[in-house]
Image (cartoon, rainbow, N blue to C red):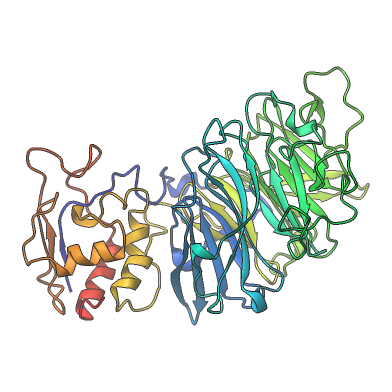
Length: 513
């Protein structure tokens, strides 16, 4: 079976996949380290930021992309079935690196009520940088198969003064309350003093009761929040953070572990307690910052200097079974250095770090399965890796992860668009896609491919889909004269082999909508 294709639409820098080549002999492992095994059908996502398991279905995951799309992934009988769960791109402003969809959490009673929560930045005329941090509730009414934007109920908004340090992680604690991490609002040294200001929600971990309701809010305030009775914003749980991008709860002890990204010199790991103040911007990690004294603040559990990494990604305390030597260790990463560490207490109860891996991509966070196993989310390649035993080189090389994987037979265009086309050229598919066809959405893409006349002039020339005959179906053509598809349209490139195979499979099945 063959399918002729001409020029594709995405440049190498735009396409989903690895941004750096790693030869096998460059794959660095360390003694006592870990393996990274491609998971989720070896599928590459577009800047994945969150991976959340279904609370009762072990093979059922939700993957959030920073651009605002959430995928539903079902892993069963060796076949990965991805479906677009929610397309929130029209809600999200993701124009800066710290903006976009930043966190996702499922209600503890998700099986019964279908409620889930997203943390994202939206456009806002009230912000000088057009960014508003927003916590919203959505609902699925079909058993977790899909959700619509019009189910959104906005719970909390915070205008951002600058476009960095937005935080954004959300998670339910063992107490059933929703915890929210917000950065200090950006700018060097927290110029507005938000992290130490009890009347600002920025630079804080918040805690709200989403099943309650306040006088003027759609959520309640836990009675023991530090400022529940006054003196500051009642939502505040703990203060003094710069960029608390990722935090999690130890499923055995309930402890709240958090990685706070430093500014000039130090990254830190905190075990956050109710009413705690972790010092920013008077202290950075274990160093005073802009002050000669800073001993009055709560101390971090561990720190490391910027010679080892400059962007800590908080992880999880490992409670799984496949890595018994790491049980009870806090596993975390640094997105800039490509390293993964374990943090544990020695015989004298002092915290020590063990280097587990040195050759990862940009691990922006970890995920925990319902049985306590861990996964690493690599935003460089778009891949999600299972953390396994042994010293296995990552497979995020040009010959490793693709947007194909074993996703089962594709028989409808809806499946083809959701599983292949919208991912394969995700960063630029709103303007141009395979063969230069304009594929803003599935309806437009289908019209261009099938409903159009046999030979249709488009910005890249000629397309022809013959249902049931992939051998003679063609996407081809070239730009002559004016480039009608935008200034960055590359010529002479071809889509991934897995994409060609998926399109051919769909055509052979009858090219049905």
